[in-house]
Image 1: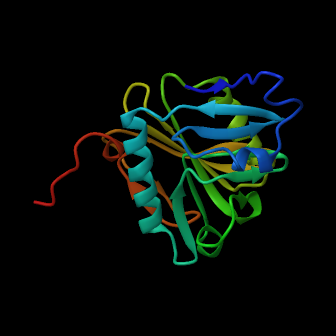
Image 2: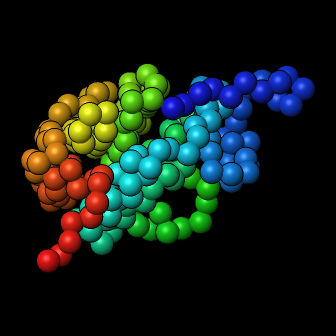
Length: 193
């Protein structure tokens, strides 16, 4: 669930800036800046967190050494500051100093969709990612059973490259070879036996 935080005028007037947002206290909430408005999201539900963590591991294991996956990193897109659930960016930038990553250093972003997600999460954010030039977008839908849609930027939009649901394998070759069953994103871990 995402909601716009309405601040009383005596606490804040005018549009928010990236500097103000990154200066917010770390309290478990996710702060994003959208067209000068502060968007605050609560801590995601457990299945969302599990899917995000496992997707990060799958992407990180498959990525070449110059790329790295990480969760909930501030991403500057023009004057906006977005926080994708997972991103793949250059290892140098993710391991370096600073409060955010610029879109030019990002290869892939992923969003975990849950039943409570707003239009902001489902439509607006992917559009901003595409406009920023991020080549790949991964959408994980947990509303019924885990389903993963892998998209590639074409112009100012994303087009579907591959899709799989629980019990099937998602397989792509770009930006690097990746194969997994979306059902592995949630639920108990499979034993190695």
